[in-house]
Amino acid sequence: MLIAGIDEAGRGPLAGPVFAAAVILDPARPISGLRDSKLLSASARERIASEIRVNALAWAVARADVAEIDELNILQATLVAMQRAVAGLAISPLEALVDGNRCPALPCPARAIVKGDRDVAVISAASILAKTARDALLVELDVKYPVYGFARNKGYGTAAHLAALAAYGPCPVHRRSFAPVAQALFPF
Image 1 (cartoon, one colour):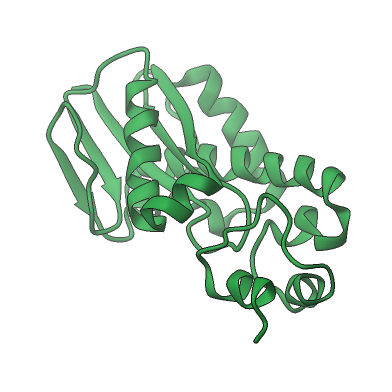
Image 2 (spheres, one colour):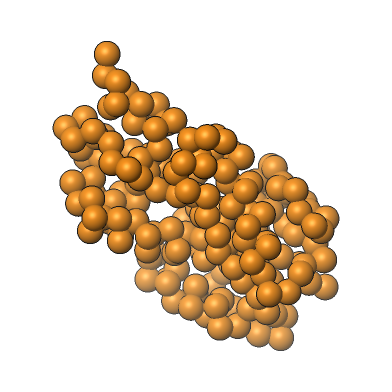
């Protein structure tokens, strides 16, 4: 049965888009080491992501940009990114398994699974693709906006990132609807 796993990366950061991936694994070509992307080293994530891209029946990565996050809110933007990822699959799934407790509106039945990225291989695969794609973009954004340390913090609100926000204000990829960014824009 063609089951797509869906997961996101980047709901919590203060900067950058939210990414989502959808994956349909090939049972004839198993991939070892699948687990929640947060439990893997960066090098292991990259290695497994390459294997997923080669061996999966279908995969797609999509995103919702910062303007969409600020307009819709992070939950709704995440669901939009998930819809885009499923729409990008070369094969239409018969069912979707989504990490978390909410499902986007999809053209197939969908089921939310809390901690699915930890417990369900096809969701783990999506978790890995979404995280590696988002991390790669944040490394690129670090070159354009070096004062924020995006290559290290991936847009999360670390002490150094918050200090840079206070010193320099937000850049175009900061999420203005998030409280620490809004505070940097309007400190009084």
